[in-house]
Image 1 (cartoon, rainbow, N blue to C red):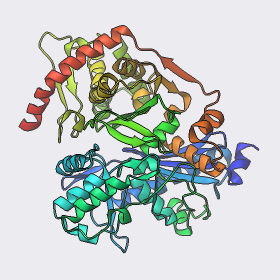
Image 2: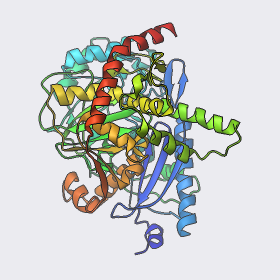
Image 3: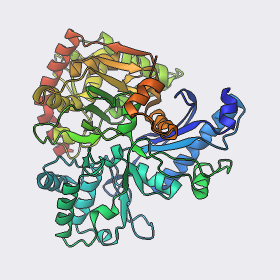
Image 4: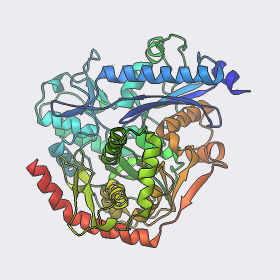
Length: 528
């Protein structure tokens, strides 16, 4: 069947992911090959001390993203999408969307980026003997309890962004196990919320005067491959405002961007891992055994099929690099030059290959927001150097690329050096890895292990959730790992880069300065 017929007969699979700065839709065939894509740019806003998106942002963005996909399909194939084999929704993990019994949003969406739940995260970690980071949904809920927020007495349901969108499209209050593992700890054997921890947390919350049962207001946990409901008529209209898309389409469990990143890089098996680097940065390693200790820098989440994963998540990655590149674009405009942003990013990244391995002594912190891995509730981007350091464009760019990875390395050093976790290789994806070699070589130097980038890595999580939609429609006749290996990644090309000794030495010297310089960053935060 040709691509046009496949699309017109409703045999394509759709994945949509809500990233930090872009909503992306990817349409694939039954081999995982991309047929078309669409997108919509959006930005979070800092409103009354909270990083948030409005619900109008969500729905306007989703409709525009899908409309862009429709237009691209029309242009490329002269075809109209009226049906689909299955759909998957993914989004940034964690955060807090709370609703009353009439499905009204009780407080503005609190995203993963907020670092306003320190007391709750600390108390829950101590009570459960399990690291509960500040961005986790349960930390947001418990902080609201501690703050005696008025809305807590009205709460009937809370979920993540992916869970919310899926619920509105299908009527089902469910969540894929990977995304659920960023709301509350998961028992990988039971593939459900950890029962003993749920009881402890419920007792803790009710001791503060709350009447609800925690288990009753959390979304139901589903495993990869399960049927998570069908697109309703109302949901079809919200997705496709043209009214062409039919209802009744199967949907897979909604997932978080961590899980879709694992799928997109075929890293759901033990001794594999991946690094997702864009506005935020996180790395995940599928664990062979439990960690010996509880570390505040290490999240314990799961793959989309429930296997335990050690995860390091940092709030900041490429935003500060983007700001510097945009400044150079302004300079080009000032000088009367036409700016091709893709070319400019490629050249600015590539020049870092010519830099001193230790960045010539230059030091920066990309803390647009707080960074819990290094102990910062709020941040202030900072660039500092001594008078005799080598201030060159190449060193500046390499410094920013190191800085984008540095907080992550602090956490990964715990996994690899203190816990002795081993990986055969890590898979890189996201904007940080788009320019050939440079991001990959820095990542390999940081983790002292090979880093590979696949052909499909540029499609990212939207492609990953499309593959999960395909897996669910296929009927789950084999495990997720087996399915990916045999049906999706067989023959897939990738570029593997071994760590370079000089790069390792240069990055370690930078990190020595980075750790010492945290005092400078703290002073900047306090002064500003």
